[in-house]
Image (cartoon, rainbow, N blue to C red; front, side):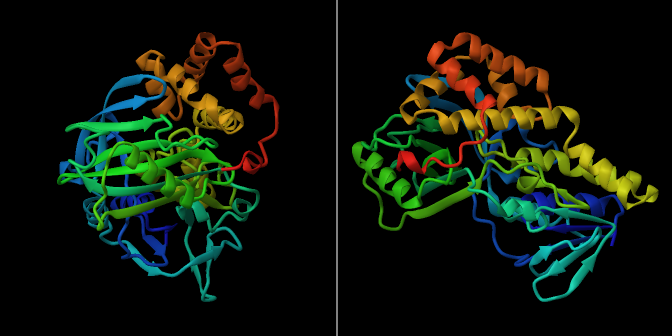
Length: 394
């Protein structure tokens, strides 16, 4: 094979399909290739790839947020129809060799070892295995910082205290759940067909806030607003790492959440994955004739140009600032962030390789903040990562 992609989620499927369309002999390895995807995926409408069919968009809504006060973000939010997305990407896998199995490592460049003792070989190997990053042993060490969430899918009428028609509530930091301790927010977005997801979310914590805490808080928040839940409400459970270092697997390209392309301040990654997939495939196809090492190097440079590496470092410092910030101060921090000029907010949330724009946004945030918040933004850059948030309790 020319390319073997490990991981059959959205990122891996998009990349495998893009490689096959460029004439590369491509394989896709996943423990359960046909398993339905169940996560909720969204992005700003301006980030939607041009070749993504409109049928894959389940709902569009005007974004707003509540920190201390309410803010209209000025951007439309798009929630994807996940079964339609899976069908669309599966339809682009024509010619891709699908392998069912679990990768357990890459003992040498171009080789993937499977749990059953067999091996697969390819000129270029890609780890798109998400949080597990099966081809990067370093990913298994340390206490991870995680975003966790517990949500319920309800009808639009039930969700009316939080969102109206055509609205998406990106964050609501009010403590309507009635608890002190680690700060959480409500995420409320339309899913299409009259359904809305109401999700109590912990943006980032090391380790993640337990789902039991989030479930309790969500039910308390809904009760505070007089919301009565139907017995058949479907639940959604979320847990993923937001502080992965860049993938260091020898002879392997990290892609998707495994790269990591996850924005540590939002948890978003699918827009970046879908946009980068055809570019990475082009890099491999263009340079494979020069040898696997050159093709891999060019693919890595496509995912991690200098600007993206710098932005990743700056975002990780921002994440550490959030982890060290007293929970009671988080709403005030986001109040300050949401008052920034739109261009700065957009750049910080979406531009993964614009280091000048990112620094300009953070500089504006620093200048507009008062002494206490300024210290909270600067000190994490001078300290090692916080080992754990457990001492603060849930």
